[in-house]
Length: 267
Image 1 (cartoon, one colour):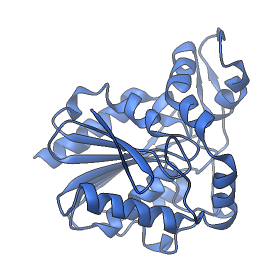
Image 2 (spheres, rainbow, N blue to C red):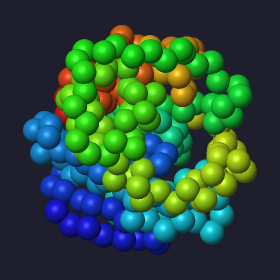
Image 3 (tube, rainbow, N blue to C red):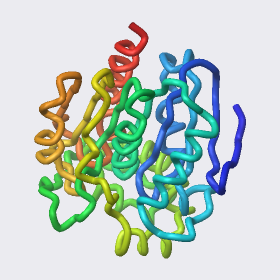
């Protein structure tokens, strides 16, 4: 494992082989992707790169608060550390938005893209979202981080002790480190990529998997299904009993489709 920095972006690398680039969601950091995926033994044959987006985790904010500026910085990072080699990209929520942009930009290199609950329309007023719900499995025992319990309930569908512990382990690091002023400015002024209408234009050989939560009240699922349904190499999965925190609500399903995707790439 190595912790590195390039143009203000902090990232961690593990292993060797074909690269998988992991991109977290807004207000989170690389802990959310690293802690989830490093438990999956099937990725050990790959080089894994977990990044902190600008203004999140240990990465400094961009001078310009826009998705175009963030995307351009990520492309420079890719050109620096991956060069012209093939790679796989994963993204969640806003990270899924950027992952689609990367798959579009690097059509000859991206062999597969997996996104969970991806943004496809940055303007929240134009989104078709679902109604959130809670499925209470058991009463929670809260011994720490009680200030975040309401956020957990508002974002998670499955309410049980394991989900609450996973929420704390995966998300609280990023939430506590996020540069709120920068991210609010990004959301107000520059959240939409200038080429948003081209996001699902992937390479003809790129394997694609979209995992969506049926009760996702942040980005929804219907518009994602509509946009990606014409991709002949795409898996579109709407997961029951899951919302925007899909990897916490249904971790086994995320791992199943992640394994399935990389097996397609290996073959």
